[in-house]
Amino acid sequence: MGTCSNQITLPLLLVISPSFAFAIKEATVNQIQEAFKRKELTSRDLVEFYLREINALNLLLCAALEVNSDALDQADRADKEREAAHGECAKGLHGIPVLLKGNIATRDQLNTTAGSYALLGSVW
Image (tube, rainbow, N blue to C red):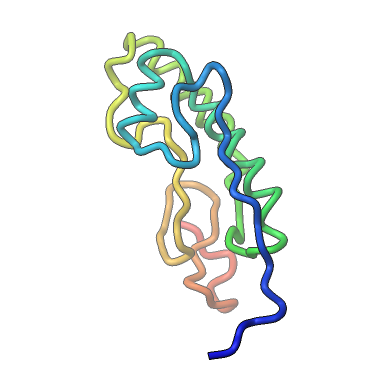
């Protein structure tokens, strides 16, 4: 087998700040929720991290077709809910952003195209 001469090597980026006890890129949902409870991480921090990643890598990867313009507002709301509940609502995916395929309908203004231009503008 031949080798590909036009391979692109991307550096492995582990983001660990002194205030985070884990690498965000490698963290599980449970580890993120625990960091929320310990107040080492907020939903806003997490969303800002992923927005930076999308901005840095998407020109090369073309993986994110659309980003929710309300993502930071939703993160702030999750942080306030968690604070009001004294961390009790920190379960499952609460406050954690997700990346969905274009065939999954959401309750916001994101397109649900399933990869078809015919469905552009189709929202739930």
